[in-house]
Image (cartoon, rainbow, N blue to C red; front, top):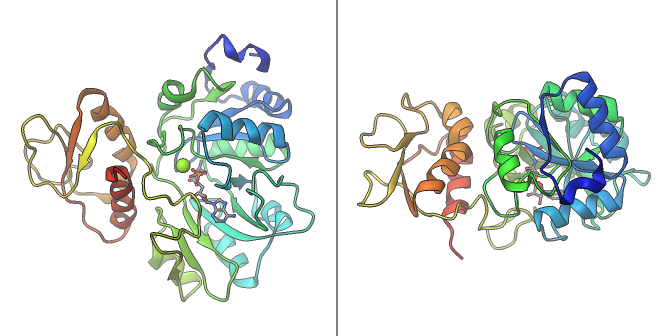
Length: 320
Ligand code: TXA
Ligand code: MG
């Protein structure tokens, strides 16, 4: 399992027992890369303080280096040491962490997250994940871990260890198998640097939930000018062409259903439950992408979690 043997072997997929967690931190300390389950999607974790490890993450994902990474830490306390939090930002953090929330703040002068991880910006995106395996790894490692979703840049995010093995297994050192991700889509990203919070990426925490803790939430960055460099229009993309808001499939199309539709090849949630649909979204897109060139997707309501699901679907369907 040494870092040097990676070219010739596929990363082992292991259950994260205490021995494996210790082994994983040893790999990370040497600059290696470990796929880590979180409650949202699987992340490709590397030592945030080590520019060589971070460079490898960009290379493995073929990610543009202008797109900064999220630094994951074990506790709000650890996050407050890396970034400058206003009282309101602090309250938001304490309310939702650990959980599917990422906060963009100004980096403190003595942040240990390296420049490359921040894409040279003065800001820093921080998250305290809730998944017990991510928590165990962060606790044991004791330093921030950058962890972008563990997929090639622009493609469908992984929600199972097998997705990571298929996409990146021959390029990384270890995959921790923490089971299917509970939430299924990425964290809500909030720019927390101002008097009011700005939404940079829709996620499983809805705007209403954020607003209830820190009022005045605005939508940050227009389509053409993403404030969050990762919010590119084409993202989460399968090979297959996607047709959205379809009432029924055309000949040759797979049909990804929602609610009580008939003729679905797979159904995100037969009962019309948006949380279930979010958890199934990426796995089902991957499944249909294996067998079909074209996928029709049933309409998904736009309220609550539906907004985040539709955001992913629109980007996945974009061909430009
Ligand atoms: O749920 C998640 O957030 C997952 C899990 C693994 O934690 N991670 C994830 O990372 O989705 P990634 O790299 O795929 O997406 C990070 C997003 C990108 O849109 C990036 O541009 C934005 O966060 N971001 C990172 N640092 C930023 C910063 N300083 N300012 C603005 N946006 C930033
Ligand atoms: Mg991603």
